[in-house]
Image (cartoon, rainbow, N blue to C red; front, side, top):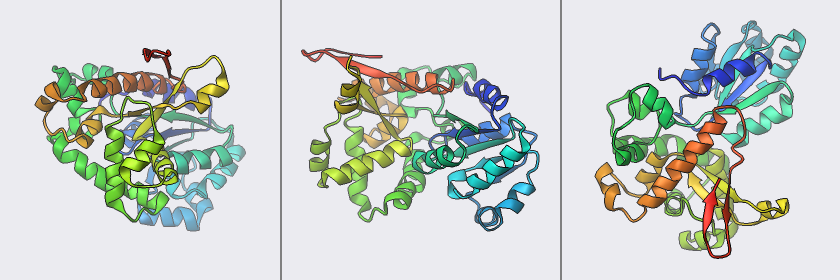
Length: 318
């Protein structure tokens, strides 16, 4: 296992909270990190149908068998379990008993905030940072190779090309999450929407133009963008204004969390293509901004980044 920058944060929070919730995109290393942090506790994955059935049908019995605590993976798959978990940790009173993981902000965060308010800390784990790869002697020496690979752990654990791994990742996880949350029927149009978003990474979002280019309504584009955010595929960087209300109203910039996934969505199939690619600057900017986001999230603090642009179009990301 490549040591993660978020591990000390998790240990610290487990000393002060009965539950810590670890969220992030699928395949970002949440399960591996959680099992390493609570190596002496049982592990249960709510993705497994039999485990999920037991948690849903007999939540008291399910938690009763985990008296000392456990790692509960993909806990958003059994949201009602969180209410029973609240009762158990309140009765017990000990810190650091449960480490929950989940891959969807919309399912996980709402459940945690409603049922476990004040009882759970929240940490977001993204793919590898440059510093994590460097410490493990796994960082590519060539910048374009680093941009092309991105940071998903599977690309450093297995002898797989990003051009082979990312199609399977998008099909297995991203499209499934979308179907579960929005019941998207026209998958081809949604795939086009994701690629159009990739072409706009590092740019100010014009939702109307994005909807028109994709051939969907403004509300559909807004809903799809929210799902991509909730699935940790992309994030929106807000503009800075002295007036706080303007920060929430003015159009944000769009960035993908992982530059390797971004490259694949842009049709880049070899690192050598990046040298002459017209969007290489956007890929590099995405890489830099996502590294800043990871640095803050690994320390358990909100990203709280913004960009500033003057009337002539000059800007600073900070």
